[in-house]
Length: 360
Ligand code: 1HN
Image (cartoon, rainbow, N blue to C red; front, side, top):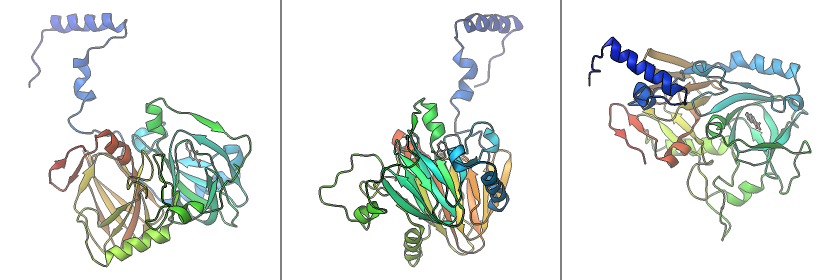
């Protein structure tokens, strides 16, 4: 509908009215409605790629300037160029690269925000979550559920670097942040290392086991097992045109995502594929594990090619169509707020020029 012409006098009368009501903290919806309820997502986030080779020296330099103990968490935040100053990588998610040097401890604390770790470099450091330790290796996906005590340590002889993903912006948009530090640096352990996978793996659960929690009882999903599953499935070559072979990490108790708000995925792209464009309302954070290639993101300002290799981090904002082109086979880890969006019934996706599949 065309906006009707109004006279300067009418325009002035309206402006006077707006100024008057402004003093009572009132504002006219009709002036802001189109920008408030957009026809489709209009993300302020930009597609962006951080090359690990370029970021790594800065992460290590931080290690010479501040201890993990003093920093509490020594992390360089990956700030979306479209959202500078907001400590976020997408509209709803935070991400950063954390360094823990041999012999260091990142002291125990807990918060309402959920966290994931995706191990990028190193071997043998641990995280302790709710009374249990797990030893971490490259490619492992580790969860820290909401309000779980967690501390990290590195008993190996090499630095460890991982990608942290948290739902901090989401938690803060609800004004629901709580956090506390434990009096001691390290929490008391109540179970042996890797007790959880010994109890809840391989499609078996102790009889009568009921999970009263809204997150997975497994908190380390080792890469070796994820990779093996992908390659076993790949024998049957059931490639999806948009995703190759894409698996979601699940809570073994209810088949849902591992955490209440953040969904995580690992996908295998077949040798030399160009995937069919795809978009979804969840901005995606990717970290390639194997292979090299490009992800081309279609933005209103034109196509943005992101050329990646293992350990890089790149982001595809909400609702921007994108496709992957890989040189050989490639394995990509990714995470997004899809778990939250689907629970709220606001998630949508579109494959190629196909229909937009509605919220469910
Ligand atoms: C946090 O607790 C960790 O536990 C890392 O390693 C990054 C960023 C914001 C808020 C809490 C961690 C974090 C964080």
